[in-house]
Image (cartoon, rainbow, N blue to C red; front, side, top):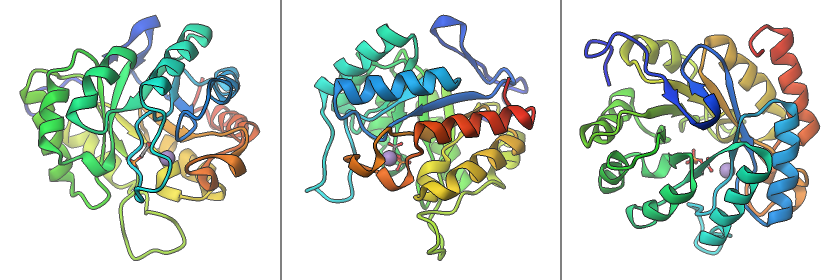
Length: 263
Ligand code: PEP
Ligand code: MN
């Protein structure tokens, strides 16, 4: 995955002519989890109207508590397929283990590997055999070497379509859920040819910090933003407090346009 091996930046070519890593900022937005067809479709229409090209939502959710909502599973994937059909948005959704990756691969355009699974080597190897791009999230306590080695596991199995994602790391800060490591971005640019995306939502853990962090990430120069949006965050089954209202997502897009960071 190093620049030494391949000096030219990798571009991830997706259906519909979408190209991640070509210098344009790609917006990926949606709820934390698929909750129902109506919920997913409502949010998808709103984020698409604002400028998103990829819909994010988990059907398999890696929750801290085993008693929390775990996702709709395959039913959720079917809803995501309907969202793609209706809206033309591409789908990024998480595979939580190597067994569900088969199923996720059938439905997703981009397969997400979550922060908690960044060093799940069996899952990484299986992702390396997939025919779809992988969005690899940095573990919340992972060093840059560990992140790049996790990507190396995927690449070593033959899949070079990898997008790296910074989503905040654990620090002593208690004003936010995690700490967004923006310094990682220019460092990664130098070290790797892979495209880089930032998730300000899981970094912040609270809605009021998401827009400024997203703008900062775009200013540092990322290939995409992964943002949680919910039309009724107070009723969301997961991560409501950090989900933007659709009008806030629109506001973010307008601010990015005003900064000439989004076309
Ligand atoms: C997510 O994006 O839905 C998610 C669970 O994020 P992370 O793995 O970064 O915690
Ligand atoms: Mn979430």
